[in-house]
Length: 328
Image (cartoon, rainbow, N blue to C red; front, side, top):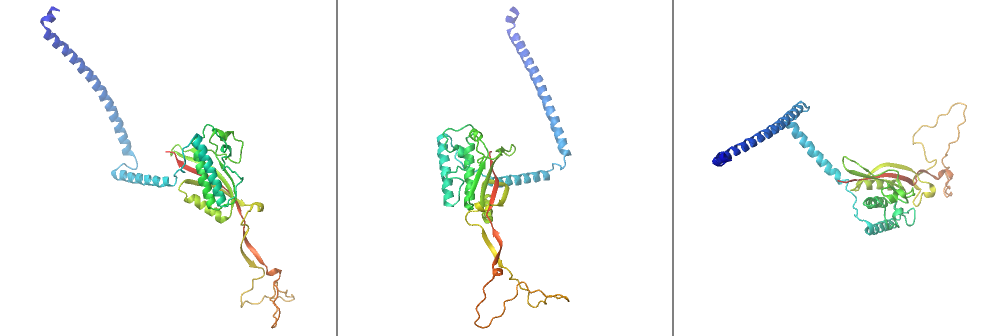
C-alpha cells in the first residue's frame, strides 16, 4: 500500500493499460466473429450469383428490363380484373341495425317483383332468408356473412327482374351461420360452401336460382350478369321446357306458319314421267277448276289451313352463380 501511495500515478497508469488491453481484446474477438459472419454471407451471395449466372435466360440487363415490363403489364391486368370483381356494396350492420337492413331489403325486393309483374313462390317470400325473417337474436357466423349474402342476393334478383323472368321459382345460397345450419329447410340452401382462395384472397359465394322465361329473357339475364360491375360468374346452366301448367302468361308463341299444300313446281319444269302400263295418279293437290264469270269463290279446305312450324315454349332455367369478391 505504501508503494502504491508513493507511486499512485504509476498504479493508475498500469490499471488503465490493463483495462485498455481487455477492451482491445474484446473488440478483437467481436470483430473476428463479425468477420466470420460476413465471410459466410459473402460466400452465400457468391453462390447465389453463380447460380444466377447459370440460369437460362441469363439475367442480363435486357432480360431484366423485359421482366420489369412484363411485371408492369401484369399489374395493369390485375387492376383491370379488379374492376370486374368489385364487391357488392353492403352495410356493415349488426343487431338492431341488421334487423332494419333485413326488413328494408326484403320489402324492396317484394316491391320490385310487384312492379315488374314477377310472380314469387310465396306472398311473403324471404329470398332464401326465411329462417331470419322473424329472428331478433342471431347465431354465431351471422355477421358480416349474412348482410353480404343479402346484398348479393338483392343484386342477383334485380338482374333477373330487369330481364322480366316470370315466375321466380327459388333462390338458394350457402349456409354460413349457426341459424342456417340448424334450419331444416332444403329450399333455401345449396350443398356448396363459401370458399376462399389462399393465394389471391378471393371469396366465392355460390347461389342457385331457378325461374321460368322465354329464350330472349334468358339472353337478357345472362347479358345482365355479364355487364354487372360485380364478380358474378355463371358456372353452370340447366335449361328444360317448362311444363304447360307452369308456362304462365305469354306462352306458347307462334313464330311462323305456312299453308299446307301450298308448294307448286316452278314454271317451265317438265311434266312427271309416266311408265308404260301404269295409270297416272291424280295430283295430291289439284289446281282449282276455272270458274266462269260470276261464280262464287271457293272456300278454303282443311289442307289450306296454316301449319305451325315453330312454336316457342317457356323454359325452366336453373343457374349456378358464383359471386366473387376480393377480401384484401
